[in-house]
Image 1 (cartoon, rainbow, N blue to C red):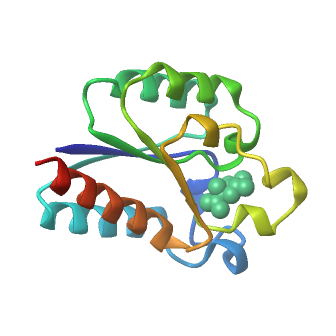
Image 2 (image 1 turned 90 degrees about the horizontal axis):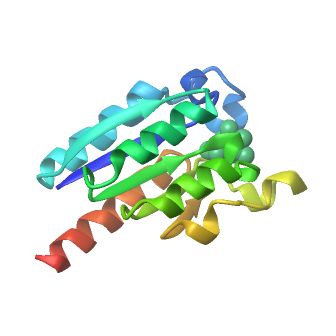
Image 3 (image 1 turned 90 degrees about the vertical axis):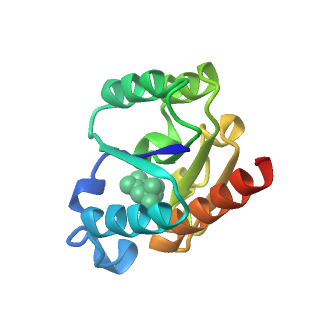
Length: 146
Ligand code: DQA
């Protein structure tokens, strides 16, 4: 099995960006943790980060038929990108939406995810473990599908 881990805008700055909200873990650290746990479970991983909406749309389109699952932190695009929502709806690969912070606890404008209705599920507020919890769910699902 193969999974794609997608990261949206400003997540390249993790580690130094508002650490009181997002923690001190860098994006490379997160990717390394995911890759290690996935490898243990026999899952191949690919990683991509972009600050650009269209690049993320391209990455989602290109992932179709190539991956079993996508773990996606769309960052700010979560709250308003209909283009990204439509790209997710257009592909057959299930997408698990993740956020480091609890978006429901923060500013009003973060409470809405335009992606959630087309995502398989949403995990937020657990810090780095949001990504790892998504991965554990995928491992369970893949094992049950065997
Ligand atoms: C985020 C939450 C978003 O509201 C914000 O724009 C981000 C990161 C998170 O992981 O907590 O950039 O997706």
